[in-house]
Length: 339
Image 1 (tube, rainbow, N blue to C red):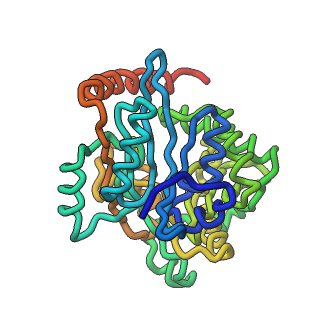
Image 2 (image 1 turned 90 degrees about the vertical axis):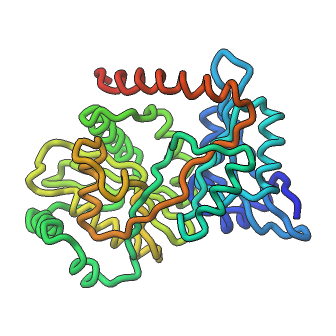
């Protein structure tokens, strides 16, 4: 087997093999639009592409160094680590951050030992280690029956009030989504990417049929917006925003139910709710409210093997982690300032 860069004419095959929308060809094109270098690599067996993964290069400002990021890729083996190290040396990378789309199971200890013996260390996550999966192959009656009684009650309340949820992929609807998204991040004190980031993401993934926008309205007023990804028969919920107005009509519950129906219409088998703090988060956790909301729909808790850094420069790796802690303290403080 060999690893080489994937060619443009191999795009469809590449997309059929990768494990997550952040590994999709289109996501790579989006990252190029925001100024990042993207490298797509394929594992070939007798000229047949059997696996693929995509990395982004992130230069560190005012230095000659970089960080390489590989989100939701395959499980690294010796050949893959060698290829990543080679590129890392060429790009003057301090480390390669890997977050494989691999569930933790009985073989985890062997995986962990292999990675630790090959210059990898547990790293700070960009992606949550846990997510929720909802089975979209269940019928509506089964889904409703499995819900927490309070969730089921709130859903019926939203329907009684006449909350409407429709797919709306217009430019105007997306701008409304950005308003709701940034209202939410400011209210919750979360860090968010810029509006330009989100616009470039949308203009790349929507024409490709990956990104879709659902808008929940009450008496014509937009209250909740979700951007959903559809990729390889899985539905994802990466971005959402909401208004504080008319909370009594429970618009998020109507949104979730319509997102489920949307996923079924798209022939998706799983609804990946993108992340959760873990099985028993503290009520003080900033994501606790989102966790509790998602949990009410009775999804399955999924645990991945976590984040590993392939360390190429141990001394600078230590220094980077120290300065990164300081940086995030600043970003969290800035997210609380007026937009």
